[in-house]
Image 1: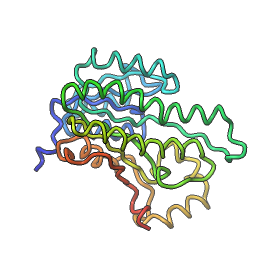
Image 2: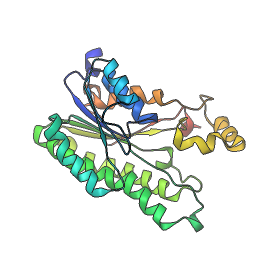
Image 3: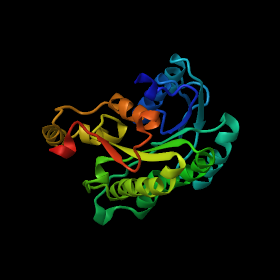
Length: 254
């Protein structure tokens, strides 16, 4: 059975790979045998923690800095990556951002920024790399959704809208691409202890109310996403497409 999860010979692009969930995803793919192209807005091409972790598993790593708020930069990266690194078998569309403010006063510039990074750039990259996957008849596309793909959240209207859009995009691409050998799925992390949730962790009342709702009785760690990532990137999930898989410590079942 372990062969179903073997990614030897595969090449993965992981966005938002510098830290947190993306870093854990990149390392998990490398541990399963994949070479990794890591992408983040400020990722060094030379020295980085993600490079160290990937190469510790004996896999090749290449780092790229791409501003996901700049659609042209995302498109240029997509055009160049396959030419430079060969066929891309796995795309983990994880890059994301969040801006917190009440809806009534939420700046439209913040709305535009979050939608561009979290949704529009995700489509641009999936579309560009998906073409090559469709031509070869094989590929795995994985988006990072959110609990707010299912719920509305508080003071994060742009984030909630973008992550709801990710689940819709996942289904739309799966409907078109699965018959051609390209599966498209999303992972919805629960409350994971990362930079994006630091404000919630630092708020004693909010943190306590969150923990009281999680059956696992703890904040998630980035490494909790590793198994789901490898599953959706591997042959083990060849008949799984169009789903959003929660990794939330039981939050949605409460």
